[in-house]
Image (spheres, one colour):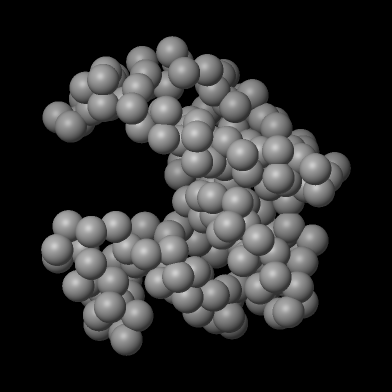
Length: 184
């Protein structure tokens, strides 16, 4: 039963690696961005709520994101395991998730931290060439990540759930390191 949470700065390769691993393990790759888009597209009650925030340019509130994650983890395909990508982003969300997993008997999760130095991340994101990715914007996103999400590394480390992977190597080497760590 594999239940993994992926952490790492923007550009660390979380999306790529978690999708590959989910395919390899035949479990769903659950990205909060995807859940949100799907819920809005399907016009579910939560999706309609989320749409109103998105339309007005607001961030979707934590509670709504948590409700969406809970709804997704309760679906039949998630009972045999999952990979969460993009959630939790804060310690409060991690605490919520911990309680949810306990009450639904889905505990035993591990947290994969893809560790990549800031300069490498900046270079990778600049190479993607997205027009909204200037070096200043990227460095700001990294600051936000470090202040909001980095405390999760300590949170999960204290709970002996943290697996750190060197994300500063080729995608193939990262994939191989991930598979080794998870299968051991």
